[in-house]
Length: 298
Image 1 (cartoon, rainbow, N blue to C red):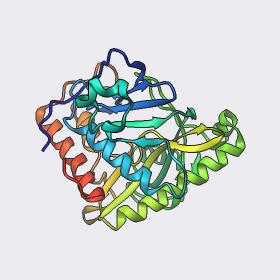
Image 2: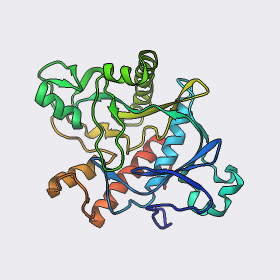
Image 3: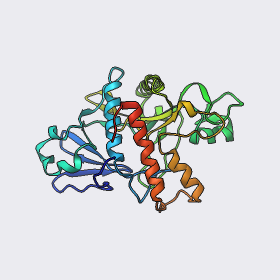
């Protein structure tokens, strides 16, 4: 169990804060970036007021693992997560950066979230119940919640700003936004990444139900950027307890989403405070994902 205090927000005088997202604080180092994973947690695109201790470190370790594991499919932006290798200007903040920071190449990030779904869950299941489709894609009739799809589907969405909600978009609209050639390559690559990760996770007793990727362009080359296959961006289900027909137990923030739904919160600002037990159990699920997938404890 990690004993360092949780970090909700970072402020590093002398470093240029480029943006502050739902979870990550990004600093511009000129030719590169620092992506600092705080312990903030969001649900339904709203940041919760209470951090989950150690969460940022778990996200960073998982992202490093997956970026290395998947780099035979596509290049990525990672330089290092070893803070001793970071530029000299970062040294005064080494203790806060350690273990939760990726030093990465700069890229022009595509303005879309690239979601791959292998199972009917979450907003995909809600969409299917209403229309028999998921993000405009026709799906076979008669499926139940959490059922495996005949094949993975690609369902992009917009990238929401802080306090706003992602919006599902069609592949055609995505093509209009970023160009048909790059859109086709992104779709093909995202599905290939999902399939390789799905197989790896399955060998470790985890079903990868769906996940979100982000891509960018650097030196004319498409590359994988941001977090990859973490409990923040994916649904991880324990295979031995998977039962179609209801929302499965998970190693991700679905537990938090389920709690918030039951609390009566209307999914608007401000978010409610989280009971200590909910924070503890959420952290335990993230830590279990790290342990199963990477063999690491934190």
